[in-house]
Length: 236
Image (tube, rainbow, N blue to C red; front, side):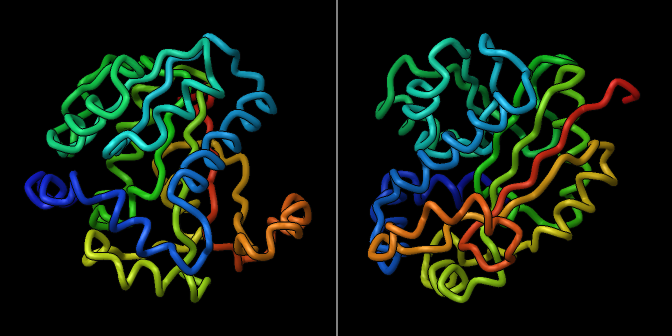
């Protein structure tokens, strides 16, 4: 991840800059935050990992996912972790009482082995140097329970509108986008048993009436974003 000061300087401006970067989609930042949590809830039901979950939001930033975890996972306990202390302060101010917050040094997660049933991370790894991905995935694997899920959402570098949005956004200045196949290989190498990856958000707000097609075209590598699902196997 970037050093904390770089994240810290964007904390108060994040929502405004994010909104400007995605303006061409016709959606507000909340749309992108909520659809990821809705997808995550569906995957949790599919893989039957329970309802009274301990969830880690890895790289939680200014807390955009927190209210949607409260909405869609009302019985879960949410923990947020980030290298940016200021971003977590902003999150606490925006959504008081919705999560527990823990500082992260960028390498070692401050939790015991098997602490979480689900680890969620949304558009974080494109900020992290590629040579650190596998080590962080191994660290995430360590803090998952047996059978626990890791769900990683990322921007799709094959989508030109996504690339343009990233290139125009100040806090994505040093971002290196990752294709779904590469990310999947890194999770496998770290020890995850892979479940699936799927592309998401093919249609802008103007064309939202066509979004009902998305469940059947998720294999097409042209959605604005994608998710990858890994599971901690009993053999780990």
